[in-house]
Image (cartoon, rainbow, N blue to C red; front, top):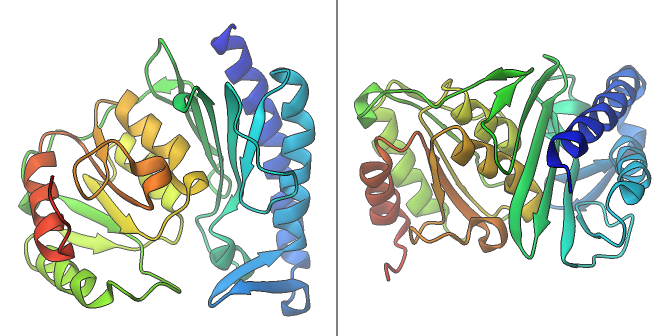
Length: 267
């Protein structure tokens, strides 16, 4: 498999789909919005974008499985599996805000070998694949060189329907607000991770996430020189529902704070 060629093909597909998403934003009204759960929204744009992505990706890797947010194709994990979020940041999208992104990862035997995050409003394509570096619009990117939390700008995501760990989360947020350059909540985990990869953020953490939120972005962070794990400092972030991603230099310190406040069992 020529991953360089495959990545180029997927980028073309993602850009085409991004144009469709951008064109539809002015047409969105609250009559077009469905609720999947508490504060969990979906529009016809999410569904149509996912159908387009699936249809275009199917012929590129014969027999590949799919794990997708909107379930427009039955979930199937094969030797090669695409993990797709057609519109990460739907709430931003329906309110006319940025960022919102397409996130696509390809796994081989449950190990990610290709990741693409396309932040649509800024036309920024973050990508990497096995055997190469991480890139933003074809230029190599690296994580930042800040080596302490008090030099860092931190990204996170507020829980929107899983409040079971909210008290501990708010305590962690309070700590980081007092001991860093600040905390940002952009509303797109895929974009947050891409921004860690290119050095705009030093760290990102969040719980109650899905594979399509983090598979591509987490991979790109690692390829840009950063570190990624779950709250137990293991490599279970894709399907584990929680993630810590940093520039690597402050990873141990940042992880220890997240663990202390999130009351996570350490193994």
